Each structure stands twice: as C-alpha cells, then as structure tokens.
Length: 344
Image 1 (tube, rainbow, N blue to C red):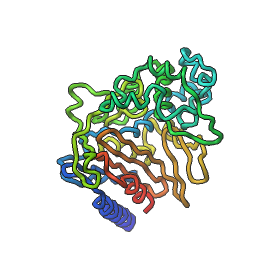
Image 2: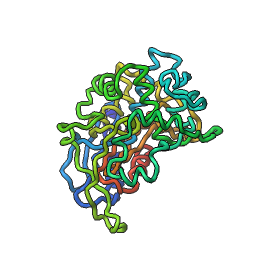
Image 3: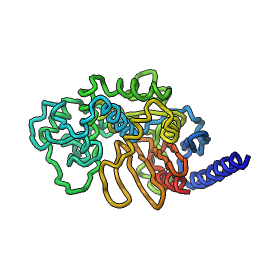
Image 4: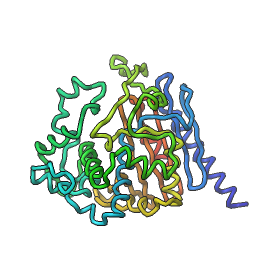
C-alpha cells in the first residue's frame, strides 16, 4: 500500500510540475501542446492550449526522427556486428571523393563525420526558391552529387550537428538492409511497437490526420499572431526529419525504453551507449543526445519543422519520460520544460 501511495504521489506531483511549466509557454491562439508524462508502468496524457487535440493527434516531429534512424542502425548491427566501423563507400560506391568515402557509420550517427549541417546544394538560393518545402525535391541523386563535392570540416574530438549526415546514414542503411527507409521504419519499429499513428511519408490519406502547423507572422515578432505553415515533404533527407507521430505512439516508444520489455530491448540498449564524448556532461548515442548531471542521465532529442516543435526524453534513474508535441513553431522553452520535468 505504501509503495502504491508513493508511486501515486510521485506521478501527481510530476503532473502538477509539468503543467505549471507548460502553462508558462507562449502559444498562439488556436495552437496547443500535447504531452505525456511517462513511467515504466503508467502514462498520463494532457493538452494545453486552444485547439481540440488528444493523444492520438498526429504532428510532424522533425529531428526526433533521428532517434528512430539510430535504432535502425542498432537493428542492422545485429546481423552486421562490425557495421559501426564500416565505411559508407562499401554501401554507396558512387562516392569518389576519398575522405568522404572513408566516413564510417559511427561517425554519421554521432555527427562526427565532418559533413556540414546541410549539403552543398541546399544553399541560400535553394532556400529562397524552396522555402515552403525545402527538402521535397532533395533526391538520392542530388545527395550523392553533393557527397562528391563536399568539403569535410576538420574536427578534432568534436561533433557538428548534421541533418545531411543522417540523410547519408539513411541511404547507407537502405543499401545495407535492402529496403526503403519508410519500409525499414514500418517493419522494424512501428509494427513491433504497435505505433499505429506514426508514419514517414505523406500521402493523400494520412496527410489529413496531421494537425495544422503554424508559425508567427514575421511582422508581429513581439505578438503571438500566427499564420499557417506548410507541411514538409521529404525524399532523401527523410532519415533526418520526416516522421509524423502522436503523443500516444511516442509515449509507447519512451515507455519501452524505460521498461525494456520488448523484443527490441537488445537494440534499444545498444542505442544508449555513449559512442561520442563531447565533454564531461554531454555525449551522443545511436540517435540519442545524452546529458549527465549528478546521478541522473537524460536521453533526449528535440525537433522542428516549419509549423511544429517537439521534445522527448527519459531519465532511467527516476523512471520518468516526457513527450511534448506542439503545432506552433515559434513556441519558446519547450526543451526547458522537458528537461525541468526529467530532473525533478
């Protein structure tokens, strides 16, 4: 009875804390934050804001996708134990530039390959003419052409966050596992975890499931007046940010990491290892950003597209997880709310 009471008190106190912090977020009228507070045994859902959403409402989740790409790499390692150290040119032989050809899977997944944040061809001119949908027409052919024109940043024991690197990683995984990225995600992660409101690519049917995203009007910088934001479509860059999901599905994902009660537990554990040490507090796993403070280690990631922001993470020591999904790109401090909860 005492154990049950303590669990209940912990859950209620955490709910109150996150709610008070989320209420401090500045949301535009008609937008919302859908969130889940998670333990290995319980999930509590709620919504803050004006729009009519629930835990099954689908949002673009942006770079949270990278965690799923990292888990795919862990799955691939089960059949190819040395894959982390293999060179990407073994799977993308079209690469002719020697220093790029020598990049490994581990360097890509930990943002330590030296590839820039965005590829060569996605320059200012590209964003001027493709600002509504910057990744839609970025094909595999363009990606490979960019690889052969890339200049690597010489990093010594540093990492440079790279959407481009994760696009390359996704292509290498497609070649290694002989399925498309969308098929790999569906067959290896979404179906085993029964994540029924999640998908990679838009089509005419599933786009209707996604809540409208908004951004702040540029002329109203100091006011929360909003305008509709375009949905982003992806091709070759899908492994960096294409996924769409719901609070309920992502809560299942985080809950599985907390309980490790899944056929994927071996692969999930593998993603949590620190494969790149940034400093005494920060490291990078397979997809996960890792932050250690005191006795707690937080595994986390955030994401954004034109009209959405997202955060999820978990603290195994305190048996806590959080999912925060927002359909207003200009919301501030969403990450701070997530971190505050996970440490309290």
